[in-house]
Amino acid sequence: MLKEIIMPMLGETMEEGYLVSWKKNEGDKVEKGDVLFEVMSDKTNFEVEAMDNGYLRKKLYEPSDDPIPITTVIGYITDTPDEPVKTEKPVDTAQKAEIKTVSEETKPIEKKVVPDTAGKDEQGVSGRIKVSPIARRLAEEAGIDIFSVKGSGPDGRIEKKDVEEYLSGKKADASAESAGEYTVKEWTPLRRIIAKRLSYSKREIPHYYFEGKVVVDKIAKIKEAKKAEGVNLTYTDFLVFFTAQAIKEYPLINAALINDEIRVYPSIDIGLAVSVEEGLVVPVIRDCGAKNISEISADIKQTAEKARLNKLTEEDMKNARFVISNLGMYGVESFQPIISPPGVAIMGVGKIGKEVIVVDDKQVIAPVMSISFSFDHRIVDGAYAGMFYKRFKEIIENPVLD
Image 1 (cartoon, helix red, strand yellow):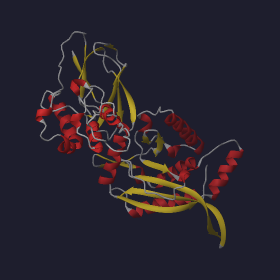
Image 2 (cartoon, helix red, strand yellow):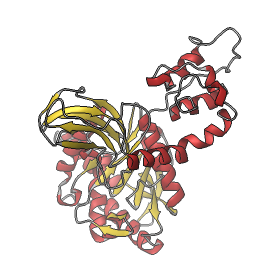
Image 3 (cartoon, helix red, strand yellow):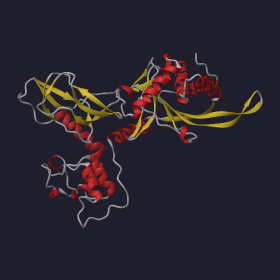
């Protein structure tokens, strides 16, 4: 019996994934639950387990920098090791992948490097050299003719490493012109995912912004008192805890826009923007409205350690409704963060500085935190967001941990 292996949908907004590696070879016996292949989606890698027993008879896709649409058949498992299988990609999914790749990435670049080249193809079988989208982009940025690069991939396919080696001089012939004084930074799948999601957010979501300041002198005192007790709390711990308290009163801030539905969730799951070596990830602290600050602090520390060790899973980063991005430690005064869809709001945290404030008609110096918010105007009206901000400020400036 022939069983299809498909590119899975690993998140609510996932449309495509990147095949990172196969964990089995063609002909290998497969047990249900065995790790079959690895996929990158939404900024993290995810190991996919086999759903059936049998034999991996055919791989229709190999790891590459090309995205594969969800539900695409990428291989077959059979009951017996010699059962006949299809050797070509299914027409519907292959056409879908072809259309997606050409329309989103390949076609604009082909206009610059492919015209009038039918006679130059010595590697392909359809009148065109096979080139990965990232290789085309690198070639275009470097101003080189893609046909001067020799491909090392299957059937002579030109991969990004071929262009990089050409640019470094390893494959350049004596007559090649200099590509200029610069280095090519790898356009990784993670960076492509980040670029696609944030470009979509700015293009499709009507952002509007609030900026303000909150006095954190009382939080600073609590922080020092807890430290004396041997409990180290960070300002991020306080922000997550008190933001959840404000969201309880304004639940639309905890919504998501999915399939033209405004979905409001009972669990307050807050994402934290974290910088890693390859880019930006947003791990999620779950059910913050039901936890005390010590529990939230422990979750944040555990999540930060997993991010540092590059051990975050798809589950760790699913379904952030509200996101906090903190750049205050870099001296940033304020910024306008981009909403992470399908969520409807994000907070930007700036630096804490000493400022003069008025208390009981007297001027005093106190620590003040700069904050900003971005909201999705399709879901959250300005008045509602203003009331949420007002309540958040009240809670932060009059903190109660019990």
